[in-house]
Image 1 (cartoon, rainbow, N blue to C red):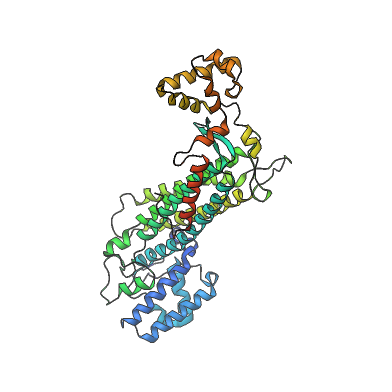
Image 2 (cartoon, rainbow, N blue to C red):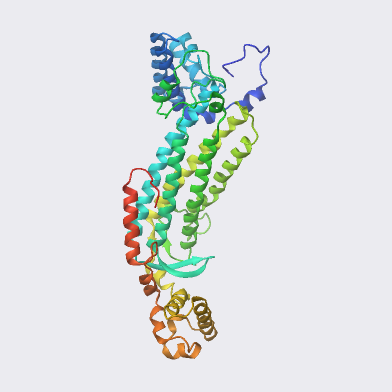
Length: 462
């Protein structure tokens, strides 16, 4: 296996050592970022006179040729991506390739690659979140009046609308977008030029490479620059938090698409069948998102455990910080797109959702609120409505079955006017507080969401 070191070693490393330490196959995830960083470094070396301008141009042309040829042109019998590119570069430009590594180390190089990779990934995540929010906003407006049950403790609680429910996911995504922007900024500082840990005696210009690579500036301390992996931990936490919310949507789609609920039908294009049961339409993509959320959470825990108590300076342990990042970012991007596909093509059984609210006692709170408006303390009203519910259950009635005679039979102290508040549809109409599902409140929420969506980036929701 070809390496960038070994002059001081009298014998070859064991083949198991080579295999165990090799990272080229996962490093290929940021082959372009390694090239981009190398071009910036080569240009800076020529600009400050560490190498000649001609040598700088030769290196840059060679690196551009590698980019044009693609990752399949790189050798795989090497230790890492840095070695692969330098070996390939030497084949193209000859011995001058050996000057590319002047005034840098693989330590600052890999840290630069990872930050550049993260930036590119986050730009994609920004776009995917916005697209899913756009869909949720459209569906929220379309179904703002579509009655359905609302739950707490997975028990029927109060009537809501499908549009109201979908918009809850819109706002969760907004927070994730805001977090991702903060992460983008936090990671946007350059380690390049920090070398192994203590900088270099060459007269490099770190500001120049930082600016060319789009960073806000160089990291002030070279030891911190090569040691820091907190931005990777932050990235993995962002991925885990995003997947947790995507898994909640997935769980709803799994439950609601079953016959027990029958609220939604998922399209053939996003479901799978059974090898033995011809009638099956399985929500496998939703289930996989739900299951792979555990992997993404585990990736954060893995890296946190790896970083715990590592002394400052590069340690080989951190070679394993990137595969979890590649894995989590890939899963997040795929999962957002799959959720979009499932929701975009979903067919909602609005009539069944509406009728399913009947008889679930979910307007009991409305009755308590009504009694409170008559001057009865809410705690007393709560107790009184509890006796109404108990009386209905004992007689096999539901709240919608009540008329003046039945109400008088089980709760003579409750005025007949209370019957007007027991309709689930009327319940929705009355809930007009900020953030509620009532018609006016929903219009305000949808308008607010439209403004948020049209803003550049992800502003705070308040």
